[in-house]
Image 1 (spheres, rainbow over the protein chains, first blue to last red):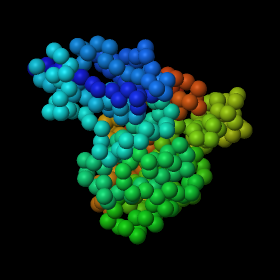
Image 2: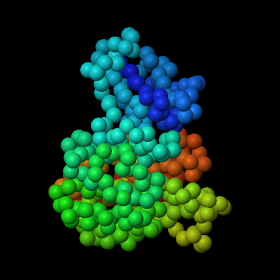
Image 3: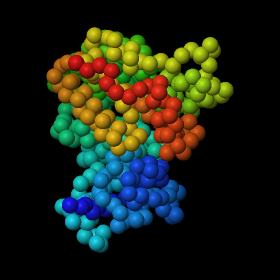
Image 4: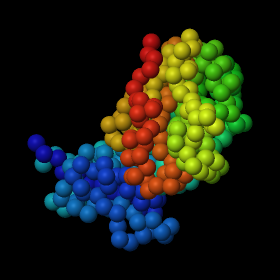
Length: 73
Length: 253
């Protein structure tokens, strides 16, 4: 059984700390080249195919901007 | 597979806790306070005690905690959160009361209050964020600052002969009869976050069972005042803070 996941980032609330990027076991997340209205480079799914929906990024996110979805395939 | 097929309400596995408000936290990017607020919110939601929880916010960076968690709050004078928590718990014995404090607040200015609250064995939960520095006021030396650590008041590093030794307040309160659960945790990676959440849940359950004071120290990073990027600060914490402040349960009965 495998899992496929996806995250939704509240880009306006993201402060671009990068803690989710280093804690993602599949290197799915990266910081965007663009910035939000506060000037922070927000987190986004750079490799959406790799996401397994483990939720590690959301667990360590200090601002709770990440929502995780997961399905069985 | 298309992402829009995954992002559906029935596939949601990690939503934002309903106890957290929509206010954007004023904390610096990567601050450990945000994670601890989230864990408190999740525990309060899971135990279904939102309407029976009273938090005591400290003086320090976490003073605005009352804006972020949708529960009842009191705001204490500097260091006096355990005293206010004592009063609140004694007036409302059926409520869950927790004091949320930083290291400058708890280990320096409020040493008397925390020692005596723990010694009396008040049925409260104490959350102690130890980032070894005064965060809000601009990075001055705290009692918990490590030897050799540079702060704005010890620019050449803390020296034991001049500034004394770092204070392990958690080991100190563990010796008191009134405490039932004393532990030290961290929130820099998913494994430690999960352990911290279990510790917070256990502390609230102890409070309901009237076992005594539960004291949770959380070793945290203050990247702004340590002058490091958030990820590097977490690494520095693992390398330098954890050897002196080892994680794990110190007392559990």
